[in-house]
Image (tube, rainbow, N blue to C red; front, side, top):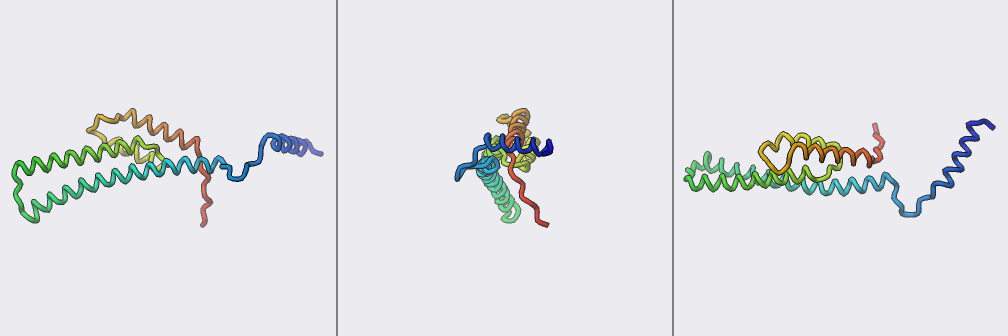
Length: 157
C-alpha cells in the first residue's frame, strides 16, 4: 500500500468521524448564504422602488410645469412660482432622503455596491450622510459578500 493511499484512508476515516451527515431539511452553507442575500435583495428592491417613485414624482411635477408654461402659455404669478418651487424642494428632499436610505440598505450584490459608489458624487448638497459613512457602508457590504459566497451557476454555451 502506497503512502499516499494510506494517508488518504486516514483522512477519509477522520472526516467520517468529524463530519456528521446533514439531517433532512438542513441548510448547506450555500443555501444559507443565498437566503441571506435574498433577504438583502428584497430590502434593496424596496429601497430602489422608493427612490424611483420619488424621482418619477419630481419628473412629472417638472413636466407639468413645463407644459403649463410652454404649451398652455400660462403666466405664473409670483405666488404660483413660489408654490411650485416649495413643492419641488420637498420632492427633491424626499428623493435625496430615499437615496440616502437606499445607500444605507445592505447591498445584495456587486452591482449594488457600484451603485452606492456612483451615488457618492450625487449627494453634494446633503448633510445626512457623509462620504466616510458611505465608504464604511461599502466596506461592510464588501466584507459581507466576501464572507457569504453563493454557488455560481454553470454557464451554458
